[in-house]
Image (cartoon, rainbow, N blue to C red; front, side, top):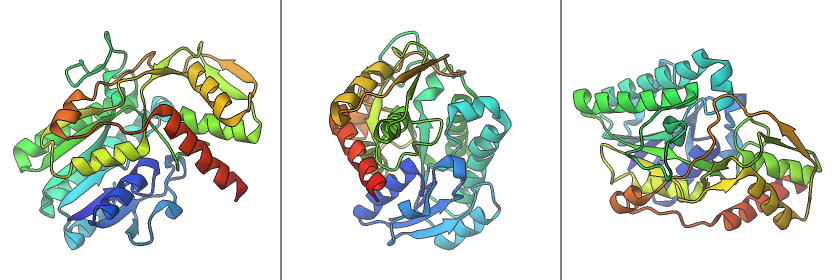
Length: 310
């Protein structure tokens, strides 16, 4: 199968591209390498073709027409809740206008399906947990809004243009290659602080919870979605929630370090709790998470230790 992965030099996208390659597919990665997006040329496998391009560029249409992919895995995005709150126009430009450019280009090139990296942020502050696909979407940040709107565009293009899709609403994804210098990704940020002997900032009281899902498991969901889940949206998580304070204690146990904690106010757009029931993905995609939080954090610490030593 011929697959284009937009954002394929980024944290999640590069793991998805690797998983497609391992499954025997022909992969092209498109990435703007935006400094705040976490995309790195070094994350792209040498057996994958790489195109340095922004998804909003006119060249996307030419690229799609030349490569003629069967599937587009759309991971290129402005992914930070904090940045979206400060600059909603940038967020909408990348996440909505960029998506429309990708969808129009896909239709022209005869693409069969788009796999879309959506987000649990589309739900906002849920009234009950765990979150399922039936939970009302009430996003509390511009990032969550643009991801929800994107799903509506996917439905429109399916109904009016015949372009199939599967949307994956990720929980808090973590693992190797995550950018520890950004504003998203608390596990990577904490690990870098722990290993460098720096203070750790914990917002609010630290008892806010998230559903942390390991990046290799997320990549497996993208492989499953190649042939399954047409026209559907699926939550991708572990159905377990963990507080920020608990993450701190777990990293203390793994690293043997105990950095000083700095307390900070709640960040704009952040929700209090999240937990994702993956039952529908298990039934329709044949997917379930395989990596425990402790195992995933140990692998992630090992990755950052290796990079620090190098």
